[in-house]
Amino acid sequence: MKKNLLLTALFSSIALISCKKKEVEQAKPIGNYKVVQLSETNSTLTAEYPTVLEGIVDVEIRAKVDGYIEKILVDEGQEVKKGQVLFKLETQTATQDAAAAKARVDAALVEVNRLKPLVDRNIISPVQLETAKANLANARSTYQSIIARINYATIKSPVNGIIGSIPHRIGSYVSSQTAEPLTRVSDISTMYAYFSINEKEQLNLLEQAEGTSFQSKIAKLPAVNLILSNGETFETKGKIETFSGQANTQTGSFNVRASFKNTNKILRSGNTGKVQIPTQVSHVIIIPQKATLELQDKRLALVVGPNNKVKMVPIKVREVPGGQFFVVDEGLTIKDKLIIEGVGILTEDTEIKPVIVDYNEILNPKQ
Image (cartoon, rainbow, N blue to C red):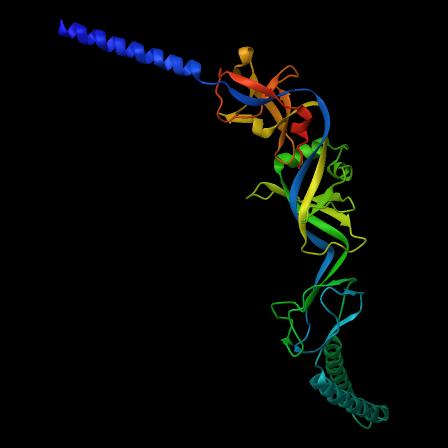
């Protein structure tokens, strides 16, 4: 009898708990989640890539001979012309050596001139004259070497450009082996912007370009923008010129070079920024990447199903360069309402309260 009473009480407790649980579940509020009504669109999507700028020519200026810096004839940031003197090294010792070498040349020449008539009259052997001529050639070679050393002590700019930093000062001893160059001269009339894109982005970019060959496709790639470090857009658009010959085996990325005309010399070597590449798409459904899930090698999107319940849909997409959007090839239509909020926490058949968001605002978010 007691046993039956205990079982009755236990079942009553379980039933009561189940009822309470159902009441709690029924009382749980339905969450508000943002959704968009999908539609086809024509759009220009922009991908951004960090970049470092370099002048079209960026030359290290180094001493070709050993010596102390006697004069610095330019300043950092100064614009210089090709052939302009930048530095002068001390040449006093070399000048003295040159004078002595010139004297030896003169003496050797006198000796040759003295021996010539004697050989002509068969007074001495021609071997003596040839020896004298060899001595003259050697003396001239030594003299020319010293003169070249003196000339190298006057260091000139090999290109038009802008002077970089000058780490050495007057009195510093420098040579061709000195670790730091005397300075750098950068031709910044055109700037190169170097950046990297991954293999998928490279293929998508080239597939969308017109042309039948690799080079013809590069030639027809759209113009690109340069966003400066202060957030401003550079006044002149640039052009993608080259891709590296092969992908980096460690990162799987390609190095890309774009060029920008720098007419006003605003840009300098070492500046940083972002290169923006526009991607034109027509009559396609575009969705944010963050509105999708990847599960067991499948890409899923969450849409609003019957009775406002979550429905997971497998989709096939193409990545738009920049990592923000997908172009949908299969799985979604313009009839679908895509859930763009709570994607990581919502589960199949969860009832939600859809909050419609403008589709264009998703594609073109305000900065």
